[in-house]
Image (cartoon, rainbow, N blue to C red):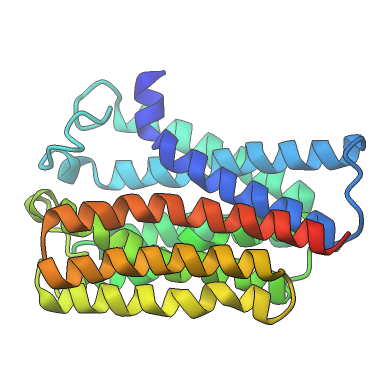
Length: 291
């Protein structure tokens, strides 16, 4: 079970499913009042959670299969089940294929749009983002697309139409991923270089990378206020998004002025808090506003 958890990157998978679940509740509210006693509501939510868990796990499994030889080169990944020899590539492939097929089936049963998006996310993450990581920093842009699909998938699982709210949920998570990814890449740059990964904007820990990180964090601030601007959320959402955005921006500014790994770590941990707080506030404020 420990090796399986490492294969599917359990903590990352949990965050993905959490994001999709929040958006499912928002999408359910758009379609009308949520009937918390309805078996149909709960069964769809459970199907989304199970399908989302399996699809995300499959994408992570394919990622580790493709990078098995590179994982042997990095300290943080050398103990993963495939490079350590505790799991064969064939075993990981069978598990990943099963999870991909069954997860896509579950999400496709919710509606075809959800199913198509799940297949697209697996392909883009495992077979586009993964090989690009050694080619160019553009990999972060490519990886941000499947990384932002969970809230979109969760929303269309409840409300099949991709509307303004769906695009805003996608957009916030899409922009958020740039400072999130680059903070992680800054902290782990020495380890990443052992495998030839190029994830920082300039390929190095330097002022250029810090400036680009700061600019994207700055862009996130107005983007996070768009739900309030368009009336999907109230002033509580706007206030929380503004406060969290300013804290996040300050952390990016500290990285810009110090260029230290310690500052990048604070930005990285700040990103972990930023997204769930803003998404939960979006949910609570939207449901309260729509009463």
